[in-house]
Length: 287
Image 1: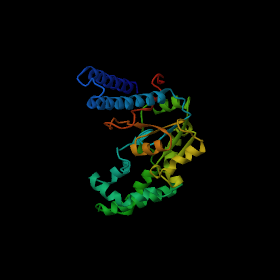
Image 2: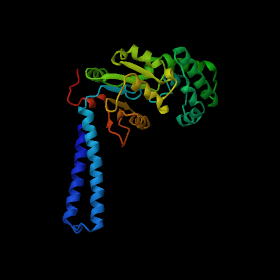
Image 3: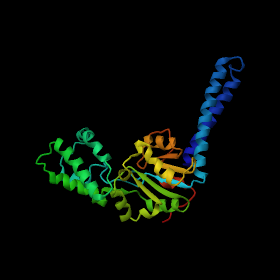
């Protein structure tokens, strides 16, 4: 976080220097329109950078009441590198063509948006999802028991996710100063997973999209924590790995940060962080 602040201040200084240089140059007559257009351009850019700088500073020093966290790629990531391709999928399906899989998946993706409130319902949903995809992929010697095993793996196997390093210390530090809320496009299995790893106790409440029958893209999903906790603009910080979700959260009056655990994002209109310890730069992590 501090590196970004320093970078922004350096950009601001350069823009101010450019304005001052032009003042001393040939465009030094107030009636000279090119000079004033150029100065306005740099001043507007400088103001944008300054506003962003102030926003980041407020994010570090502001007394937020709530921090709302996504689950995927914020708390944990897919063990195989792909959310759908579970360890059991890799075990049972040979010669996986990811591009072909993604094309077929588009046909069945809506299944994952169904409202499911129990692990049994989730298992049945994933069976329908994988059975459709694998049937269309013409997997050699395919039968429905393969989809059943993969669906079971996706629902009940704790090793399908990998927790990020130091996640317990990060949440422990945040929990001391803020109410933590989880807002995740997910299914009942995530609650089971969090309980298994003793992570559920860090959160005042966990909102799971399938249980409510809406997702972040539907916008109304954000209204549940906002209304339940009477969250006013500036009181909550939302962290997600998806810019589109941040756009909606910002519309709803939440301050936002983009999580990039794997350093995959080149640039963003939002401030990027690589771990939750960025939220408390002056605190030392526990051993």
